[in-house]
Image 1 (spheres, helix red, strand yellow):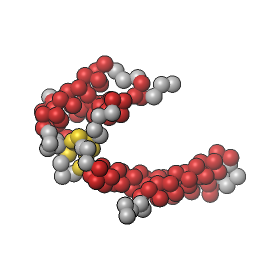
Image 2: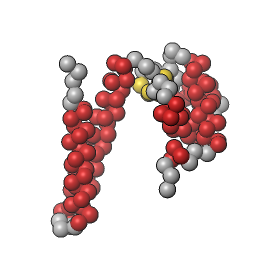
Image 3: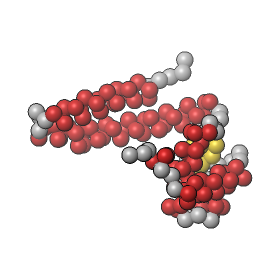
Length: 142
């Protein structure tokens, strides 16, 4: 089955173009989600689809990354320090998500089915992901 980025609809690509145009118009400032919706005249679901598609297009074409901050909203960024700060926030968020999944779902499942092949495999893989994310999250640029 093709990845989501490989099965983009024409509509989501149009929405991505609209979002990109609106964000370029707002540069260097960013736009909050409500501002993005008003400026683009897209519905919230169209704007979300456009943002998702735009992230895929950015990756394919090597454009500056699209980031979101509480202060500035969505904006294009090429400052290495800002990008590193954004990436660390996302990594820490995903680390928390993984840890809660392990403690809230996987550990109780393992307690119910301690000899299960699937749960042993899942626990091993998730522990590996958790330790990798933990190393990244604790990285300090010396």
